[in-house]
Length: 102
Image (cartoon, rainbow, N blue to C red; front, side, top):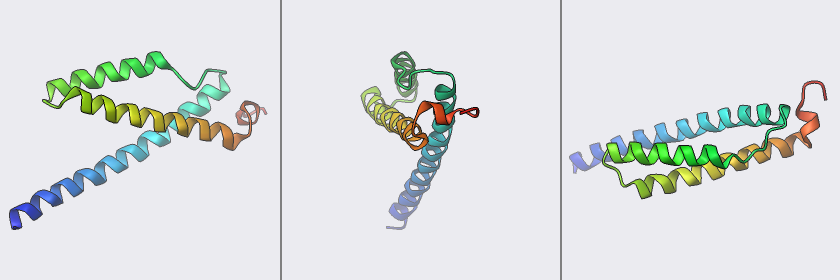
């Protein structure tokens, strides 16, 4: 049982790291949203999303992880990040108020 507990502790540490990385990603996404708003760039960038999926599928294959699993996880993460960008815009009230001169 001690071995199982050690393994679960490792998984718990990984989970904590994943949550911290997601939080960091969301902070960066808010900065990306601010930049997009200030420069009149659309929030949704399907070409970027496609590139991310290709990249993580390739990496997952190199690491011996099912690419379908990783693609599913990243599509969820990207959806949540898009929602965070939308939330940023909604908090501003409009594109205009997000600008420093607005």
